[in-house]
Image (tube, rainbow, N blue to C red; front, side, top):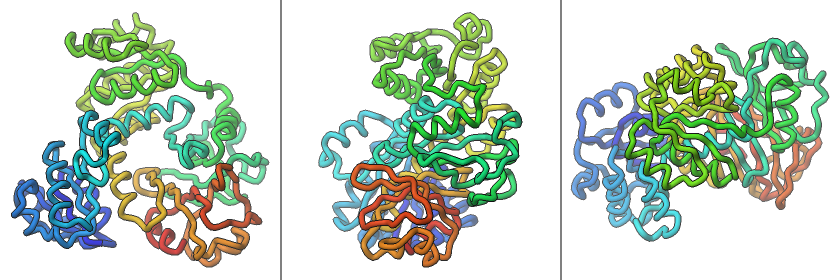
Length: 446
């Protein structure tokens, strides 16, 4: 594909870097320093200029592009860029990155409003990811596939866990769950029957939601594995607001802390089932008084990351059972983890995943990165020509000489947890784990 990325800040540069190995990428930005940086790190062509201008888009060869990504820091510019690109090239697929949920809501209801093929909102995606974790609060990360019928969850095996030190074949798992990969800081391993679940290893699981929840109870019996009910959100920005709104839609009544009086009042009017507390989330006396220790889950969504790290560790110190932190800068994620925050959500990564999904082979429904960029969980629809179709999986995988494992299959509204003898059919939707370095080759082969 020929891809034009306009705006190469952290998101745009990450997208350009991810695509440059397999595609022809042109990066456009007004800032020459950014362009120099991306040229030094990535094999891309660059063009300096304002991507909202027609002459700049023409010079960047948008008229011959297959994909145009508007990824500047300004929503209106990104929409204008994509709309103009479509006018110059009606065959290009356009993606606009936005932060204002009003744009996203309008586009979702009336796709013709902006003449943009796809619109991706970081705050909305981040809030959605947070809400997924609420249903399984002992997990490090949670994603749903197959229209919600399949769940992927990552766990850390506690030292005191009854499964610690056992092999997978010793666990005698039920039919509703597959263990697909294990990680430590140095290596990644596709799960086999002989794989040992060592203490503190990170484990990736795919299966039916109820069965994954049951497995979580087996893994960490001392923790509460049911849905979190007492939820405190620190920070009333757009992510905090969207998270509270989605929790209300699930019948929950979270508490939300916002320092700014005007913003707090506005949130209270918009969120009828949320208790909005106007105070400073970095004040330990306030957090103790409001019962942060009684919360099943604390969502820390403040900015900047340094302030968010303070509230996250403070909440843990005051007795919060679990803290989920929103981390905007990749370099800080390891700092949060080493500080005891096991679950983090990165808004930029959420956007990058959505954009990259549209650059892969046809049939890709969803992509989620795990362990940074070491692995991917992908939902893909099989065609009749796939080498996996019409024969047992244990035979079909021999025709695809790469590391991957099928975690679940959805077929005609039903979920199958595949084993070696399972025979796949055309239009089956696979939820599979694959080594990120081989993802493109695997998906092409399927």
